[in-house]
Image (cartoon, rainbow, N blue to C red; front, top):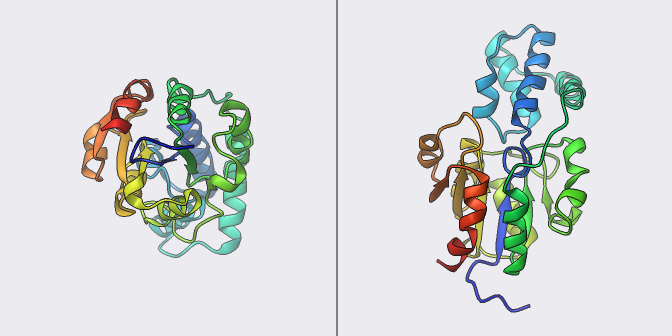
Length: 227
């Protein structure tokens, strides 16, 4: 299919972009921290959204106990985090996200998932909520990379899966770490405010444009592609 647009691919975050899942993630992480005897604030998990679970566990254990997390701790605590997550109220699709994906597909844009998550309860929903948009071969997850966001590796890996150059793609993310990752990978970076993180944080991370909701992003995505 010929694409009249210079942009050929969209590399898209999951939590906070496709799903309104970040409040559930924050509550699950707070449960893990209480179990481990570590002090934490929910805002930390919004600001550090996009990092891998292993990084978060190591970061908090270093902060609390002055030592790195063991491999067993990373496995045990992340399994506990997944358990706490699925016990939360059902996660809803982010308003505007399906409309955005439909617009991208209408323009022949290849869509690739770029998430720091390994949360199967959401990954397993992608095909039913976003049919055809994120087949398994076009997914970058925490299991796909050595370095999570804000390192550029997740978005660089997304470019590989899409088969495009950095100047042929856009990245769409709602978190400072994700914005920094996409910007460092050299893609045009769209920041979207979908939670407590202000637009100034996304702009400071390197977002080329910031929308105040996924609905606003969806309503402007065609114009952005044409630009």
